[in-house]
Amino acid sequence: MEPTVNVNEVSRISTGTVIKGEITSPNDIRIDGSFEGKIISKGRVVVGEKAVISGDIICENVDFWGKMTGCFYVKDTLSLKEGCVVDGDLNVRRLVVELGAKFDGNCKMLSDGDFDKLAGNVAGVRPAAAPVKPVTSVQAPVTAKPVGGTPLQN
Image (cartoon, rainbow, N blue to C red; front, side, top):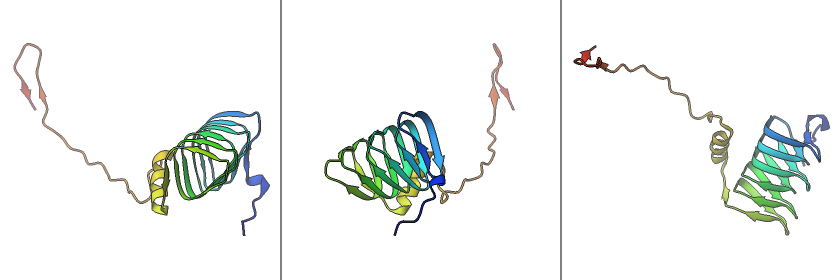
């Protein structure tokens, strides 16, 4: 059974709307307009029949009817619907392709660990499993040469 989604928690880009940039949302996103950039959602992304996307989609699940040039990074299921056109790579855990969907690119089936690593790299976020190492200061000997003279030692 699908979880109930509150309509007020779905971000929407309507038909005729053009957006360039990056969208990050903890909720579901529906796109019916044009988008250029990166879409990052912790929920489901639904791309309508008239939508045109140029960029990457990083999310939990996708239902895709539109046209896209770019890459998918999907933690669970990508559904390519009849009539959609995708020119790019698919990085998914599960893939559903309906008859009439068009896809030109590579497909990599991911584990949860693969998704977290890839999505973190694409989104510009360091994965939680990779702690930041502290930087230690290293001092090297400095040799300076004055113009027209002999080298000075520190």
